[in-house]
Image (cartoon, rainbow, N blue to C red; front, side, top):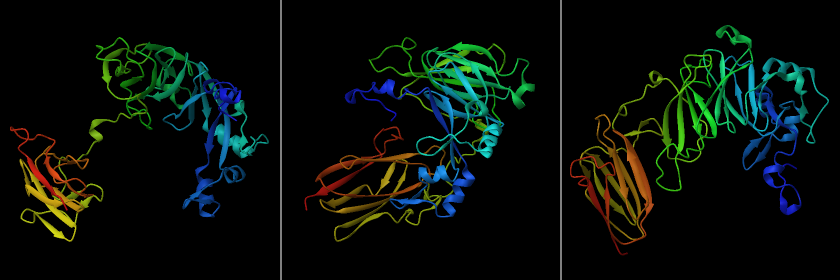
Length: 394
């Protein structure tokens, strides 16, 4: 119905997926959804309760609202009153009113899709459309009453004014494009400081560009992505790029920026032997003096401690066919005293932060002598924190 496919005599996929003039914004009623689950109106699929499309339609859980084709992102304004949708093939951002959506659902609709899902009238639920440029994708917000939309084809960030409760935050007319800043190149996602929250910070924006082309030295065909930092603190038409940063990973998607003073991180775990998965001291944690290797048949248990720059025990003797359970505790309590544990031949590589305990299990398959070592190279001799895993034939 939706994809196309030239093998079947249809348009190619890239055209077929955009064949309709409008796609659909999916609107879920969470209260009705939870009520349906509580009432047992679900289908059990692989042991998981699932609300079927038929139930979602008949119970009024799901409604559709038309939106410009190839939409990217459904971004809610900080006051929760509007939803901004960008159709990549439409030069506008479409702003939906949440109160209008609720009123339209309450009033009911006779129009339904082929699966019975109610379709709301576009003009009834839309507050405004703002022309921002070519290839709009995603939108973020600040604390000055502005919205920021990435423009893939324009390779720019558009700043435009919000209406409603944000009108008193800026002097410009509501719902109007104010300025664009070129970025390099083909921006996809973007992030303002706390721009997905009810209280954005409003000082900086990061453009997460898909291409870098000529911004950095070429060291091979695979180029980095380019993040660019924009200063958005001044408002109005002032929105300069102030920094480029190469990012050596795949195409960037969705990121969050939060204020550093909200981080209340531990410098080390509260107690030695801490299991970060259970957020408590692991009952298998190894104390100094309890280290060693024990065997019961082909079951081998290793209890190790790590402290700069020594593994205890230094040597572990096993046989091919053994099943090894290895308990490791980093005894360090010093800030940033992380130790690694790498065991070549077994595809094992751990990171143990100060005070952390981990337990691993594996079957021994290959005879030989293998060096296990700290991958942090934590002392001057570089690889002195090491030991030998010696595997004898069975």
